[in-house]
Length: 305
Ligand code: 0GY
Image 1 (spheres, rainbow, N blue to C red):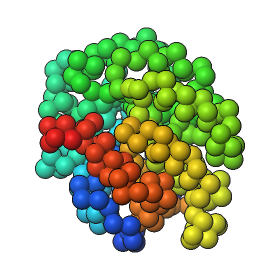
Image 2 (cartoon, rainbow, N blue to C red):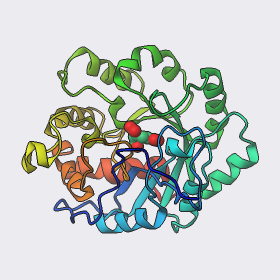
Image 3 (cartoon, rainbow, N blue to C red):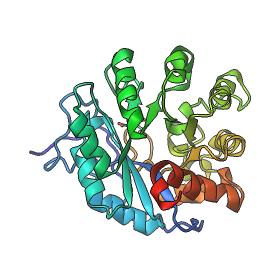
């Protein structure tokens, strides 16, 4: 079956540059997705967008091209709670990919066990309204209680303006909690303004909360090289990501976010995204924690991470 992409859809960037930044050995791309291919792994009927195909072979080729050793593949909302494409990617990764899935309360213990064996280590709860329909919090809390004994964590995706109303739910979660893209701050606001201060407090007061310092291309207002100039690309995001990396060096992760769903005005060259890393993690030690030590501790503890 052929799918028609959402109008205006931007496909992932073909032929990304080789990064100039040399990744530390063993680096992990800790936030990326697979889409389909739709003929093999149909998109979910309840999806809010229809993407281009972006399968496991393309993801693994990007991993090797950029110089990453491993991937953490996060279930994308266009696949709903059907994690088949993600699980297939994990099973073909030679142990070099772990996963974060979306499940409903109907998931069986056997299914959770099978997912664990495939390399799943977390569930994702999404609160971004343009991406998903509302799931009752009691259902999410029930899921969190079931995955906690497996040693899994919860990944949360929300926008900064919604943090106050989600606070009580997030702080009641019984697991490690990983926030996607720093809780999507409005980077036009001051880095020490009330909105981002609340996010910093969220992490400071709750040692179980981690953050991905990913997605400058999504958060930036000043924009990509074509708009801001190569040296200034996404620079308005730097103070936010750098503050989180330097304040919580042992609880940060980084990912490409390939294949970059729902970008509207440009598609980033993933090589240039890697070159952004030394602006937000400025020492070799911070870079090693962000790219190797932290993701290994969370996803591959069996390898001494
Ligand atoms: C991201 C961001 C987005 C989409 C998804 O699962 C998804 O569909 O996460 C977005 O549109 O902001 O992290 O990929």
